[in-house]
Amino acid sequence: STVPTVVLNDGNVIPQLGFGVWQVASEEAFATVATALEVGYRSIDTAAAYGNEAEVGRAIRESGVPRDEIFLTTKLWNSDQGYDSTLRAFDKSMGELGLEYLDLYLIHWPAAQADRFVDTFRAFQALKSQGRIRSIGVSNFTADHLQRVIAETGETPAVNQIELHPSLSQLKLRGFHAEHGIATEAWSPLGQGNELKNATVVEIAEQTGRTPAQVIIRWHLQLGNIVIPKSVTPSRIEENFDVFSFELTTDQMQRISGLDTANRIGPDPDEFT
Ligand code: NAD
Image 1: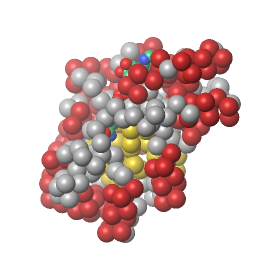
Image 2: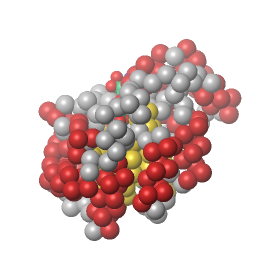
Image 3: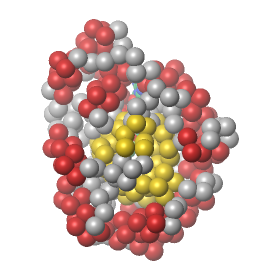
Image 4: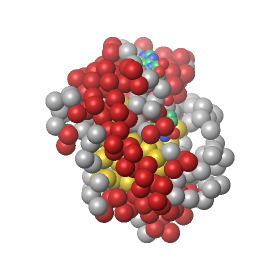
């Protein structure tokens, strides 16, 4: 395939470009994931909280693509954190998905007030040692949260999936990830569509003869991020995958990185429960 890969700190390999299904209603999730797999995506990002694991699993099972050619991620919801409740929530997700193993399980949010994310990660380690999950990681963790997991479990999460787009380029946290061998995965990589109207992005799109979405996805890829744009529109699903036959110049990369305003769309990871 034409999609570059990222080697995780456990030796497993994830496609650098994947497909996200947040806010894809369960009724359209089957057709949407089927389209993505036909277009060529081989990495799908869902979560228990998205309410579409059953349809995502069915689309994967019925796609005709061998299971071992697909990289599937799902996430544990906050209220299921804790050792035993994590094991139960994992069984429930796998029942919904109808699959034998999972490629990547993420703690969806630290929910640090409850202080259960370390025990949750210990349950992830047990599931990984049983062979039911290939890689274990986290989402929306700060450097402090990551440091606690590393210190208290002795294992470094393979991935931290964080809000990351031109308005929030996460320079500092990406630096921390690089120091510790944690792969950076960008959620809301297009800023939920808001970033596509940015004048600088539009100008670079005109210069390169590409669309704003393609320009931003290229920016992520060239930064080294794993990137999981979402769309339910087949032409856009294709457009977002057609990003491997051009490159941004160093100057274009820097102009996009210069758009950082440190503004989040989503909740503050230190506060969200
Ligand atoms: P996104 O940044 O991928 O933007 C998606 C939206 O952008 C679409 O709904 C559409 O309106 C627009 N769009 C997409 N492609 C386009 C194109 N080619 N042309 C014009 N408009 C286009 O937003 P997202 O869905 O929030 O993020 C992607 C994925 O990240 C999610 O589906 C989910 O899998 C993941 N995510 C994870 C978390 C987390 O807490 N871990 C939070 C949010 C999202």
